[in-house]
Length: 62
Length: 405
Image (tube, rainbow over all chains, first blue to last red; front, side):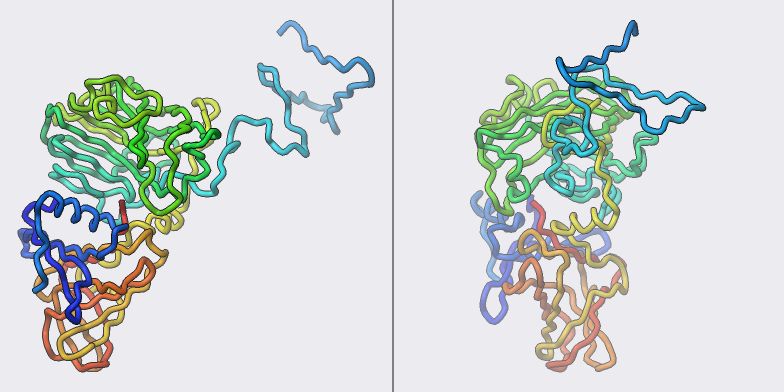
């Protein structure tokens, strides 16, 4: 589902506020990105938790 | 007909009156060829079993059943994985199932009042045992309580739709719930590449209560192709604990030729058991009403160059804050789904605190009603407290919010 994506937290004032899912570049140099809330009812968040359960790790914020 | 018989009770008088007859021409009243009770002028309709007899909700259960709304795109090619591609609320399941082009098509049944259909066009084949290709939609539990699922008074369900498929033969329509229960009913496509109307009846389920909340509690899936992992058992024609092998027994392989297409529209789900003769008509919605319902799950904000998003304010010289008020309120706190690149977003106006930036981050304060977005990856020439217009600044820029299942 997140093949070749970069997944990392975003911070505001030192606190993680969401998860960024950055997709690979398109041919025109653009890319798709998701800003996923830390909310268990959000489907993207649920998918990320499944991805973590498979042994992957969310990167810390920049 | 040999005779017409009108029989009264043992006493009293039965009178059949034709009010103010027009004596210049005949008037014909056709009685049904069945035993029953005709509705009085003050009748409440409780004895009727036909049109509109059992619709406890003003809106259809199925969203965008006529495939009219397509906020994301009207055509997507080369797809090998599952996602929402074109018609809103319809999730395309592709797993080990080859490659597909998904289109909001104008190929529709003739003179049935539809203008759009959802089309899957196979462009690379598969015969994989784990193959699953289908079209599905999920519903919130709080919208389905009147199905009384999991109770002694559980309702039967009828699903009806128009389908046009290259592959003739058995196809499967499946309902499944959040309790890992499912029921799968077959129907037959008789003629290749021809629109056919199908009516599929599901039994009631007295087990598996649907939670009364905004979670995914019931799903419908129209199989297009299924590998042996899903066809090797016995079709679950009554509600039972989910078993992959029993999900799509008999399903033809719609992914075995690049000549294969599968189109569907006019999907309706009715409470109760109907035939093609008694089925209530499809509930057409206005474009605006259908769009608003779909926007509870996905809101397309802007796409393309120089499209206005809203007002942004500078928090300091580098960070801008943006507030989006969402209407309608979304199912849950949405993801921001956007296409971006260097300087794809601009804040500009008369204040002089202009800037460009490339990411849009969601703050944790955001809700399904209001979004607080911010960025600090652009130019550093803002003035704290200044506000300016916020707009897209590249033809490839796109911004949407998703609270889909």
